[in-house]
Length: 181
Image 1 (cartoon, one colour):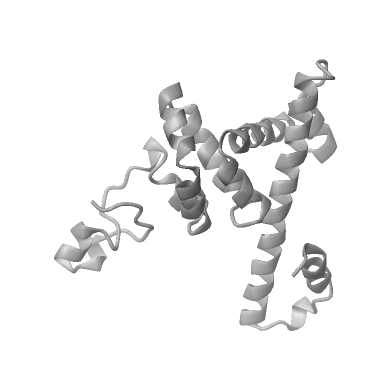
Image 2 (cartoon, helix red, strand yellow):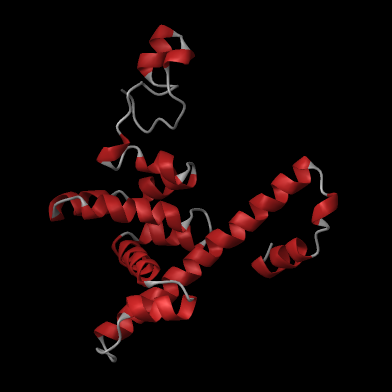
């Protein structure tokens, strides 16, 4: 289904008469459009970065994004970071382009890359296919858990061998298991 069809369907909704399931389904469709738009924003920002590095050296992509989106330079900086991340990890970029992941997933990846040494960055970006699949199957917070040091967990996660061995899920934290252990 095309994005235009989804948007037209959302615009035609009689929101005040939707039941719970219809409302949740509409929210899911809206989020899908937003994820797709995240990909468009990143592609356009990447073009601004390219122009600033080639034909228009006086162009500051962060400022141009801030002006175009009527936000601020913080948003411009975030979008430039996303553009650089998807350039470094094309599989993450492809997942964003199709709406399989959100810009917030790319923000997590951007933050993870910023905390690594060059060799570690290369290792992380080389795992792009696996990371894109992980991001598509998780929320940005779940995706960040194995990538960012600030996501250390105090309890083992449900589904992990530690929780399965005890068979007591109340002592386990919900979340996504990415590797055994």
